Image 1 (cartoon, rainbow, N blue to C red):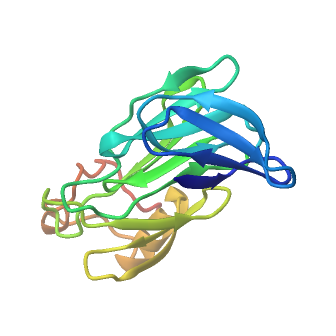
Image 2: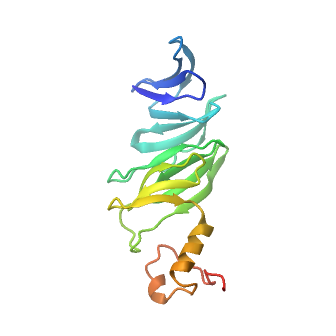
Image 3: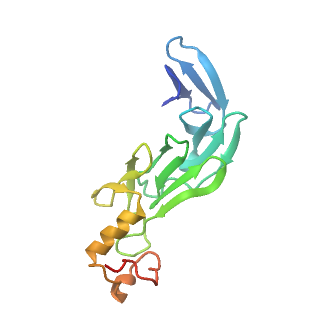
Length: 199
C-alpha cells in the first residue's frame, strides 16, 4: 500500500499494489471522495490543484496524465534509474510543471508540451561516458535548485542557472579561453566563441 499527499485539506491518495484504482480518502470521515483508475502503477503524485498527476510504473518509468478526462499527456518517459539504482528525484513544482532529476540530467516538463521545456545534461567530470556519476536527492519547491551528490557522496545544492555557472567558470579559469587539453575531456563540444566575456 502507498499513501501520498493529495492537494486538498485532510485528504490523501491511497494506492494498493496490484489494484488499478487510486483512492482519494478524506481523513476526517474515512470515506473515498474520488478515484482515478490507472493499471499497473507503482506510485502516484498529484499537482497542487489535483488536475494532473504523475504515475510511476514498472522499471521506474514516469507518465504524466490529466485527470478530467483521464488521459496520458506525456510519456512514457525514460526510466528514472540506471542499472546501479542511482537515486533520483521527481515531483511537481507549484506552477504545475514536473521536474525529473535522474540519469545525469534535470528535465522539466509542462503538461501539454511533450518535449521538456527546460533540460540540463551533466557529463562525467573526467569526460568519460561511463555509468551515472550523479545522484539527485531533492529539489527546491520552485525547481530552481537540485541537491546532488557524486559517486563519492560529495555534492550539495546546485542552482539551475547557466549564467551563474558561466560566471563561476570564468572566474576559475581567469576569464580566458579553453586550452585544447581542457576542451578534450568535455562531455559536449565547447563553443567556438569565447565563453567568458572580455573584461
